[in-house]
Image (tube, rainbow, N blue to C red; front, side, top):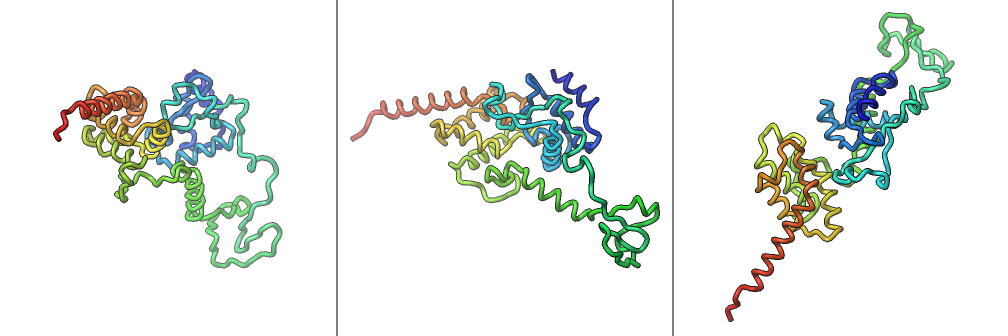
Length: 288
């Protein structure tokens, strides 16, 4: 299935995509499974596409705008997708793709043109520009259009990326443990995620640390577990068991994903150990 979608992307992807957006789309197609769905986190996409996370967010927004991908409701997720804390996306059939965003199709108003030493905007009177401050140099004046500066473009991209950042929706800042910010409370979801980050960092090689921990995703997982009755102490015990016993870890998998996929077994072991400790405590002779 992935091979067919991959070929479809190569053949029919819109020409308006930038190289980075095209690479992100290729990566989604490569990971697509049954029903054309893929559930890779933005951090994973950024790592595999050799680009920044904000570039991935911008690319995903562009692909949605072109009706190439859409988010799948959780009720339609396949069972294996529930093992990961990521948005499930569907790559739509190529006949539904747009070749350009809605705002770029059809008639456009006349752009601002710079000719000679004067600027003409929608029939307005010419304004002298003897210093050529609009950055026009050579070429046919009829082909020259006024463009925003690079600084203005950077501000627009930054604002769009800020709106697309899931960390903002979750109310979490980006990786406090990595930025040297003040650690969260030990029993909070983010504090437990930071604990996992610290513990796993002691057993992984330096080249394995990149992407080994996703604090936001872990915190969201822990929130779900705690709603099901799991205590912070049990989560700490599961983290200790995962890190301390090499057989519990899959060196080929991303650490935090591997930990979440084995949560049922790890939490069951932690609960059993907690119960056994309580029984031993009750059976211990009391001295009066």
